[in-house]
Amino acid sequence: MPQWTISCTLIFNGKAVMLQKYNILRSHHMCGMRVTMLNPNYQRTVEELRKLASMFWPSELSRQEAELSIIPKLIETQDQFIAILSVDVSSLDGLFQIVNSSNMSANLFLKHLLMLADFGGEMLQRLNSQFNSIFPLGTLDYLWNTQSYNYSFRVLPVLGQLNNSKLGISGKKLLENQPLSELHKDIIAVVLFSGSSIDEKTAEILAKCEIGNYIGLPDKLQKFIKQRYIWVSRITAGSQ
Image: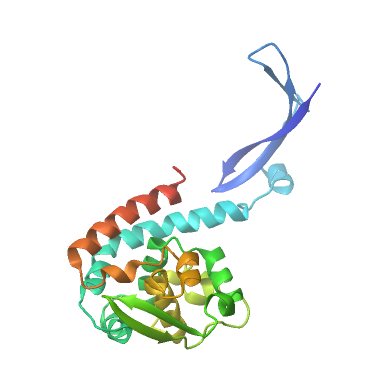
């Protein structure tokens, strides 16, 4: 008869603690399933549980918890983020000056952009490892307000991994007030305008990086951002 094993856990001092494994036996009775405890006389003290149990969150749960804890911070600073992008600037350098002069840290501004573009850790690593394929000339040529622009990357690709921690956008580091770095500028350029790249391959790979089209257009920008945050919040909360 087919058999599966599951674990029963409890939360002790905020930690997941494994109590006991069970055998699951398929049956045509009792709603098609019967649960049998491996040890029916199972009894343990708290200290025994400490010695036997796994006292740490799995890495996947830790990652999800960190992402969820970021959402309130993003919602709290959303209006400030919208105000920065609502300024009508004529170049990326103009936007960088606005970010520098604002009260919003560069890493928090970048986190807003990455969330809106659904640009996660896996995509950051892909961007870095395949950079020369995505941007063979080391530049981003894009259309903005019917005009052509060129951005030369300052530091991309970087040595090692490009991840949330290096950008200062992981859970704890997001609380740090980081100034705008050359790496921040490169990623901001990618997320804002890669979807409008003149290179069709680049535009296809980074199609969601289109937020730059709404710079200086407060009404359209606010509508776009509100819609995206509803979608992002549902994804993060696991409803999709």
